Length: 400
Ligand SMILES: Cc1ncc(COP(=O)(O)O)c(C=O)c1O
Image (cartoon, rainbow, N blue to C red; front, side):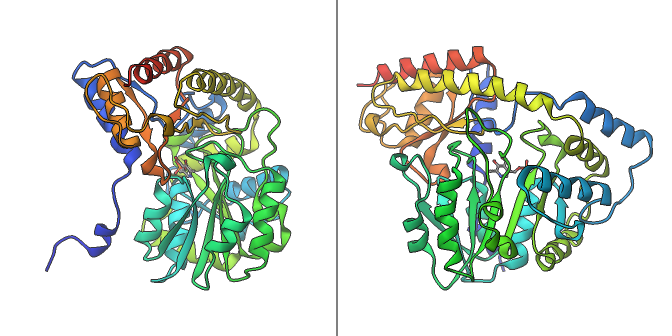
C-alpha cells in the first residue's frame, strides 16, 4: 500500500512559487537577481485597514467566528456587490474564506464528480486546473490566442462545452495576461452560456479594481442576469487592497451552493482569521481613494514595461487592460542560442537562461498553459523594472 494518495499524483506544485524559490536561492548565493514573478502588489496595506485589524485584536475579537464569515463582513460584501456590480445578494448567499483560493477550491470540491469537466480559458491562473484535478474533475483548457488579445471567442466556448461540462471558469482582468473583457466581449460568451443551461459560471473577479485607461470592468451575472441562478461571483481583498497576507476571499451565489461550500470549510479550516475579517470590513466599507493612486503607479509601470519589451525584435508584447502582469510572446526567438550556449527551444529554456545569464526571474508561459510566452509581474519598483527590461533587451539582442 502506497503511503501517499493517488490524488496527490494528479497535481503538480505551483510553478510560480517554484520560480520565486529559485530566484530567492540565487539571491541567497549572492547573485544579483531581479524577481518579476510576484503575484502581489508591492504596496503596503493602507493604514485605516491595518488600524481596523489592530482594533479588532484590542477589542478581543480573537475567537472562532461563524464558519463562513461574520455578519458584518457579509453585509459589507452584499453592499459591495450592489455598489460596484449592481448585483443583489442576501447575506445567506455569501461565503467568506481564507483567500480567494479557498473559495474557489471549496466550490469545486462541493460540486465536482469524477468525469465532470471544467472549461478553463488558457493562459490561466496556475491553480485552476490543479484544483479541478484535486476535486476529481477534468480540466478542459481552451487556448485564447495572442491574435485575439488572449481572450476566448464565443465559438471556442461553444465548441468546448459537452454534456459533461459543469463549470466555465472566467477571469477578467486575467492572471497571467492582464486581458480584460469588454461588456460586448463578455456578452458574446454569456450568450453561448444561455444556450447551455447545465453549465455553471465561476467568475474570478480578483483583479476587478486593477484596471487602466478607460476599461470598464463587468462580471457575467451583471451582463446577463439570466445567469444569476447559476453563477458564483468570486472576489477578494488580496490584490486591490494590498492584503495578500491577511487571507480573505469571498463569493456570492445560490444559497444551496453557498451551504455546500460552508460544509466543506466547516470540516477543513473553519472560519477565516477573525482579525482579518474585521480588517476586510473596513477595506470594503472604508475609503477607496488609495486605489486610484496605486493604479496610477501600476499604469505607469505597465506602459514602461510594454514599451521596453515591444522594442525587442522577436518579442510581441500586447498592452493589457488590467491586473499587474504582461504576457509577451517570444515566438520570434525560438530556435536561437544564448551567449551561454543554451538553445531556446521553448519558453521554459528561455526563462531559465534569462535567469541564469542575466539574473531576471520571469515565469514561463507553459506554466499557464499557453506558449511560447512569459509572464512579467510589474508589481515592483520603476527602477527594478527599468533595469530588468534593459537586461531582457540585452539578453534577446545577444541571441544568435
Ligand atoms: C486570478 C487569481 N485568482 C485568485 C487568486 C487567489 O487570491 P488569494 O490570495 O485571495 O487567495 C489569485 C492570486 O494570485 C489570482 O491571481
